[in-house]
Each structure stands twice: as structure tokens, then as C-alpha cells.
Amino acid sequence: NNHLSGYLPQSVGSLKHLYSFSVSSNALYGSIPSAYSKLGTSLHEFDVNSNKLNSVDKGLQLFFEDFKDSGKYCSLYDNPWTCPLPSYVNAACFIQCSKCNTPD
Image 1: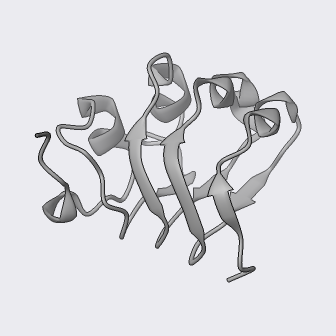
Image 2: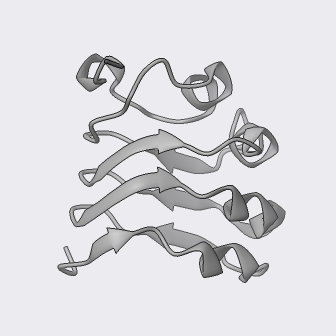
């Protein structure tokens, strides 16, 4: 916990050589930005556990598919997701969908 709050920054998407992104146990909210699709294959860990994230922007299918069956780590547990999340997210990451919110 680094006592971070606010939205996940779009600018992280420009860090093409980023190996690990771990911001678990903070107060980050909103969505996983589509800009993260630019992170490329160098990212081996994506951990946003225990925040207040609720959605995944469109355009991230390749980002999440890169984690599937690759030995890379992607974890989205303990966030109040608005469901349904895209199936490619569920297939690639550790996620606790039982905590999903239902759309109004």
C-alpha cells in the first residue's frame, strides 16, 4: 500500500519496457485505460488487487491475451467490477467475479 488514489494514469501506457506494474492495496478507481494496450510484451506482472477499479476500457484484448498461458502474472482480485467483464479478461487474469457489481 502506497496510499495511492485516483485513476490509473494513462501515461503508464507509454512505458514500453515496463516489466512489472503492481499497485495493489490502494484506493485507485475507475477503469483500466485503453492506453495500456501499448505496454507490449515486456510486461510480466500486472497487479491491481484491492483497489476500487470497476471496468476495463475497450481495446485491451491483446493486452490481456498476452498474459494467458504465458507464465506471466495478472491479478485483478478484490475490486468492485461492473459485470460482465469481457471474457478475455476472465481467461487471462486472476479475478474474483463474485464481487462484481451489476449494472443498474
